Amino acid sequence: MKLEGEVRIPSGCAISAVISREGKRMTGESIIHSMIPMHDRSNGLGGGFAAYGIYPEYRELYAFHIFFDDNTTRRECESILKEGFEIVQAETIPIRIIPEITDIPLIWRYFVSPLPSVLHRLQLDEKEFVARTVMDINTKFKGAYVFSSGKNMGVFKAVGYPEDVGEFYRLDEYDGWAWTVHGRYPTNTPGWWGGAHPFALLDYTIVHNGEISSYDANRRFIEMFGYKCNLLTDTEVITYIIDYLHRRLGMPLDDVAKVIAAPFWSELESGRFSPEETAKIRHFRNVYSSLLITGPFSIILGFNNGIMALNDRLKLRSMVAAEKGDTVYVSSEECSIRTMSPDVDRIWSPRGGEPIIVTLDK
Image (cartoon, rainbow, N blue to C red; front, side, top):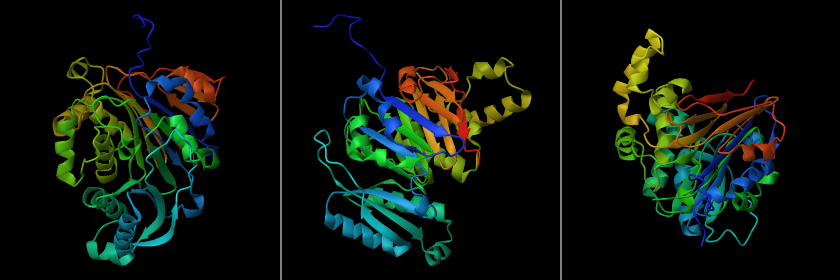
């Protein structure tokens, strides 16, 4: 029996990310290794990666990664896709069978382009059409789940430890300019393939350590705009909030951070912010109060031009950032970063509620 002080309490899940500002492509090997020193933060019920820049030969096409229960469901889903898309390439995602990953569904990817005639008939831009298609399949199509749907990027996730998930998907064979990863320690939601992080819609991906106590309020608000939260975990709603604020409303990411991790009222009264900034934050807090995320969290957002890392205002979950040349690292722990770059130029702990936003130089 272990005594108090002899058991490590890691405060939940592990997250990590790496991005090259210059767009240099890196294999997934380094980000996989970054999770090994944080192994105890996971319990084997979910692990996953998001990778950006991995499909340059199909960069203008949407890459759908889909789990299927069986081939009958796959064929039915493909017939639905053909009604709205040209399917340029359809194939199984290569995997490496390992004993640590079990209960494997059918895992396919499709490189698709929305049919112009359909977009014209529905009067939708292609991103909105893709987002609605993903929601329809995931909500109405039993036995099929689209877990990645962006351009020149992909999500790879499973039930297992992240190190095993990376080996399972052969991520050492992919090259990307940015990677994020998650090791899951679910506390009040089930562990299943679709419930592993990252959660994705279009090119937005979220990995999250923490718990969203505001989930019901967040979900009720976002579902008024056509989003459906049905993946049995609270993190899913963060992805949809960011898609709504950033893509649909055109809000800059630093303002998105002020909505979901808003400054306290006391900070606004302290004179810390300029009058213009104070007025803007008050507006956000009044208009988007239901999109304020409460509870302990640290998140990393991936998107088509970079990453954003963000803590809750009280910084109840750990997060460390570092730089080495043009490369930026973010992780739950410094030891994780040191596996990727032992001798960084700069390392720091971001303040709660203040985002780190890193974008490509070109």
